[in-house]
Amino acid sequence: MKKIEVVAAAILSVCGQRVFIAKRHAAAHQGGLWEFPGGKKEAGESAQAALYRELQEEVAINVIASHSLIKLSHDYGDKCVELDVYKVTAFSGEPRGAEGQVTRWVPLNELQNFEFPAANQAIIEALLADS
Image (cartoon, rainbow, N blue to C red; front, side):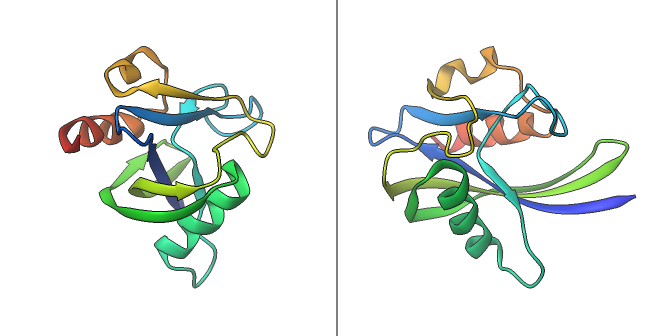
C-alpha cells in the first residue's frame, strides 16, 4: 500500500474563532470534500518546511506562528496517509485559493456542517479541544 506523508494547517482568524478551509478539486483524491490546506512532503523536507511551502503555494500566506496540533495515520484502502497537522495562529497575507480552489472562513463551531475526508474528523476534534 502506498504511504503518503502530508502536512495540513488549521489556519485561525485573528480572533481565533474562525478557521480557513478549502474544497478539494473534483479530480483529486477525495475530490469535492472540504479540507484543511496543505499537501505532500517532498523527499528530505521537514514537516514545518513543507507546511510553509504548501501554504505559500496553495493559499498565498507566509506562516509567522504555528504549533503542532495532531499527528495521525488514516488508511483509505488504496493509500495510507500520515498527517502532520499544525495550528497556524499568525501569518502574513490574506488566505485565498491560489490554485483556483473554493475557500472560506468558517466558525469553529460550524465545522461539523461541512463534509471532510474521514481522516479530518480527528483533526476537527483536536482543533475544538485545543480552542
